[in-house]
Amino acid sequence: MKTFIQYIQEASVTPIKSTPIDLQEAIKVIKKNCSDSLWMFESKTPIWRGEKQQDSILGKNGVAIINTTKSERKSQNTSNWYTLIIDNSPKYKNYPKRSQSLICTNTIETAKAFGSPMAIIPFNDAKIGVVNASDIWDKSIVLGDKRTYISDVNDYFDMLKEFGLSDTNWQSFIDFDKKLKTDKKFRNSVEKNVEGTPIESLLDDFVNKVLKMYDLGFELLTPKQYEKRPTTSRETEMWIGGEVVCLRENIFKTLCNEFKK
Image (cartoon, rainbow, N blue to C red; front, side, top):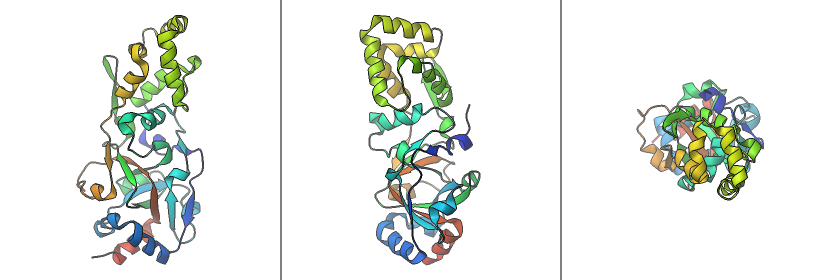
């Protein structure tokens, strides 16, 4: 099973695009666009991201604005199946796309494992998907009559690549489902390939069963709603879509004094 350190370092297909700004401009932007996140400075509990490329992203002043929708992520250390499925699930239609989000955590300790910690301050209209587990890989999935993990299901999906299923193209799921229902020869070939595996249980209604499998108890919050999440809540991974202000750790601490009530 893959680990949190592997998934959080998912690569960007398009490099993260940022707009470095100076501290005074950052204060103006935060006051104007991040009023629902000011509590993060007051409580000293921002959202965190560990970033090895922090210097190039934040620039010399250690402050930048990122619009996550201008970049696209793809899983680097594993298949991209779960990102594709979550992005295309009606259950998560109002969530930010994972493929166009920053993967973050609510603890600085976790962030530090992946690089220099950046404080992430969302704009008021940003969206926050909360995994409600420290690691998305800890979320279990019911496949057939067994409970398993995302990493294991990824491996099963890999078995279907030779039949046209792609981890970068949702239409391939639609086409695969249709062929299973209309092409007997195709169906027999697939059944022979996956015989004895839990993936057999999906073949009768492939797309709907896959989507149901990925109903994983995520939570969608605005920055204001996120404030009401108890600070004592367990560690969680989250993904943020939209515009955010990113701050080097020492800059965040400086601004905590600036935004004191």
